[in-house]
Image (spheres, rainbow, N blue to C red):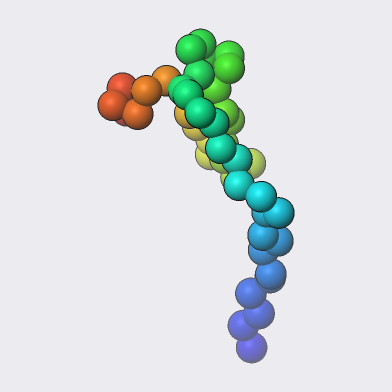
Length: 46
């Protein structure tokens, strides 16, 4: 038997109207073991 735990869905998405100007204003994302800091224009992301 294989049971997949239900992942709660967020009530609303996160939207920004412009990229963060500084690294400290970025959006930290991750799963607890691996993470990233999203900030700046999309064409500069690596």
